[in-house]
Length: 263
Image (cartoon, rainbow, N blue to C red; front, side, top):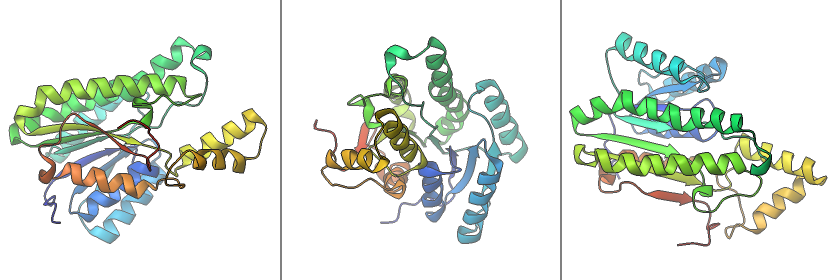
């Protein structure tokens, strides 16, 4: 299938590792000019070199901390002005909050991660949507979590933030659809990333068991009996970024190996 993505530009958040990195690679393989953004410049540079050597487009990166939405906005504005171009695709993807019970969370925890996820996604959308409207084409993809449909134990702050993101995205999708812009949410299940490995280790420490036991407990509740791979998220994202997905809008799509019991 020819996805016809050549000539488009994408801003891929959290693209120095994990799911964000794989999305950047897959988009580049389809001819997209990718702008990476994360806070670790060393990792960004490594991904940039990988993209440039393999796919050849003029990819770039921006170093920014999503803990400061004002600084993030300033850097994006400067980047757009300096390079004299805009974006067709926005991938909102940010590291999740640490584990913990919701009753033990401080208000500051909610504030911190609402800023990193909801506030920054909103700021980026406001910056990029005018050009998308002008071109009558745009794609906003939010990498969230299956916790949108079924809250995950011991991820109190994360569950709350993910729901807020999903509601924001659905509202936005209704407002921009007439301009040829779609807004969709991808809900990864248990995907083998550094974050999942960290969650397994944390749970093992809390429960005073070996990480292997926690890993097996997860695998036993996934019908496919395996963890997802970041590339599998990237394949879906890439399709949803194409013109062939133009009538898919405002939905939450799980990629979870059948974990969720709901339809």
